Image (cartoon, rainbow, N blue to C red; front, side):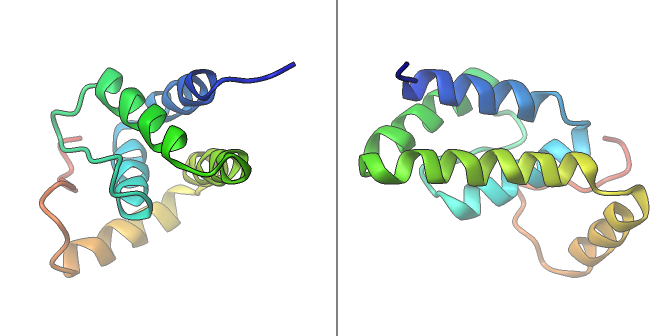
Length: 109
């Protein structure tokens, strides 16, 4: 059975969108830093991110696609399982930094 990059991107976007808002924002910021081909901002549509993932996966050498997929999927899992105290500590640290404006860490979200 062969899996397409579209199926890999579908899985990633479904998992990412299932994260609570702040965890999703932090994950997407990590993803943008990891691969500048997957740019996002507060208004990024999941379909746009999915298409960017497809383009990114297609740009990789074949032997790197699954490695990157597992890395990204693992990062989503990490954000999902991060306890609230640690999440709060990360948010506090990010607020202290002059972090990119693409990440809104307000308590509203």
